[in-house]
Amino acid sequence: MKINKLTATFGKFNNESISFHSGLNIIEAPNESGKSTWCAFILAMLYGIDSSERTKTGTLPAKQRYAPWSGAPMEGTAELTADNCDITIIRSTRLKNAPMREFSAVYTGTSIPVEGMNASNAGQLLTGVSRDVFARSAFVGQGAAAVTGSPEMEKRIQSIFSTGEEEISFTEANDRLSAWQRKRSYRQQGFLPDVDVKINDLRESIERADKTAAEIRAAEEQLDECEEKCSELESDVIRARKERRKQMFRDIDAARAEARLLAEEQNAALEELNDRRNDLRESLFGRRSADSVEAEAEKDLSRLEELSTEKKPSILWLPALLCFLLALAGAVVYQQVFTHIAVIIAAAVFCLLALVCLGLYIRQRSELLEAQEEMQAILRKYKADNAEDIVLKLDEHHARCVAAHKAEEKEKKASAAADEAYERLTNLEARASEDTDSASGSTAEADFVRELAGMRKQAVALSSKISTDKGKLAVTGDPVVMRSELARLEQERLQLQEELEAIALAKTALKEADDEIQSRFSPELGRVAAEYMSFVTGGRYEGILLNRDFSAMTKTTDDAVARKSEYLSAGTIDLLYLAVRLAVCELALPEGETCPLIIDDALVNMDDTRYEQAIKLLGEIAKERQVILFTCRR
Image (cartoon, rainbow, N blue to C red; front, side, top):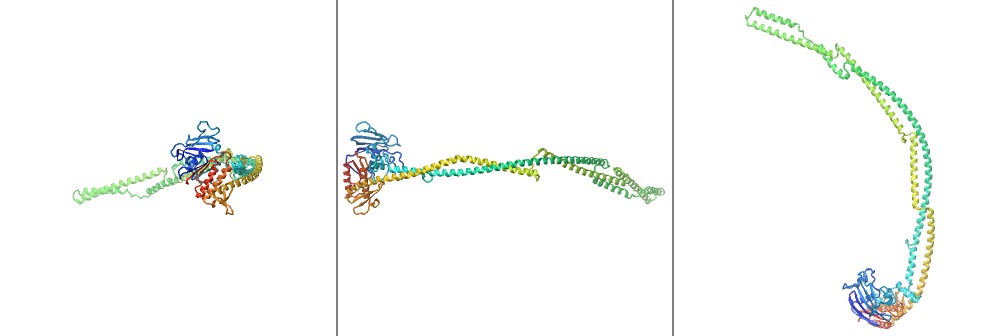
């Protein structure tokens, strides 16, 4: 395949074109002139843009890095020659998130499509290798001269040195075997650890189930014992209850008899109280208290005593004195009428004294009558003839009050006793009608009831435990089924161990086969790369040793042993890996029509002498394949 012309709207290019010819093409241009962009465009035209590529640290995906600066859709045209036919490839963008997804390939100058070529396989058909192999062989990007291994590259090498098939890769096969190995035994996530965990869990579950089943059996035995004991206690309670009821009925009969007797005593006390109250009502003072009557009577007796013992002046001399004075006054007047003034005054005095005496007499007479009347009123009040009679009546009333009080106290006591007896009878009858189980007290029935309640509580707890344990057993699973599953898992574990052994054996065999292929490929690749290295360095470096991952070591004619690339100068490293690249192109790319060699500033670190030698080497290679070199050197 040969590239003739490229037209790109890609990155900084806006419908810009570049042409190439057969042999060696050297495009000299300064930095930032678009050399790397043209290289990326060639890769995009052959293999397309990976729209699934994501941003990585320090690196943008191609769909963003080479988005046209003009804002136009990303697109381009490549005019090629392949299999002696001129072909024009066009890639364009219809959807922004799928750049250069639209594809067409026609024979140049016609609208005839190239049969079997599409956007996905165009690069594979034109170069003869996949994008991965092309990028690791004929496409040397800026700063990426070193060759790295990959499954695609291994498949290509495998096809050259073994069966010719490109579907086999040691890395892929080894990775697949390693993946199978990890799936079976990697830490706690493989099949084998998972089976081990399941086996352990199942064994623990079986152990728990057996333990739970044993606990259920023991609890059921205890429950049977509790139920038997409950039956015995129920019989004891019934027997004790019958005895209690018999005793209760006896107590009720006794209480009824006592209540009747006390009721009769209460009635008798009440009749006596009524008699005493009637006697008290029939007395002179009625139902008045003895204290109030005695207090009032004492006042009246004191008054009687005062009235009877009070001294009264005699009033019989008053009339005599009055008559005498009147007579004397008359005599004086009669004999010496108006004869002397003194006689007249004396007569007047005598008359006045007579009047005073008359007044005193009238007053004393009135007081005496009042005192007699008051004494009679006091005696009438008590219906007595004298004070002694009043005292007798007071004593009689006091005796009746005492008798009434005693009868009242007796009636109260009898009534309280009757009420208590009736209340006892009522309580006994209520207890008898309720017929409740008594768990209190210290009776035999109470002891049996308490023991029966405790035993029933224990039976309920055992039943609850049995139900809970059966629930746990149901959740855990049937031990028979679990043992069957355990046997299956143990068989599966044995099979996994056998598979692991087989995988380990297969990896060993695969490694031996890969080592054999590498023992044939690496020396040949190193020999060809050493020839290119010697050509450029004028024979200074004579040998190159390559590892499986394409890391290289080289030595000069003066060195005793080969040195790693880390100990070489930047220019020598670029030259070393360029030689390896050229060797890979020669050995790994398909025979027949060659694909172009694309180099982006891979010679920038070489001195002038080696640069000229490298250009000569590329010129020799350009005789067999198109070489396109982008460089900033002149």
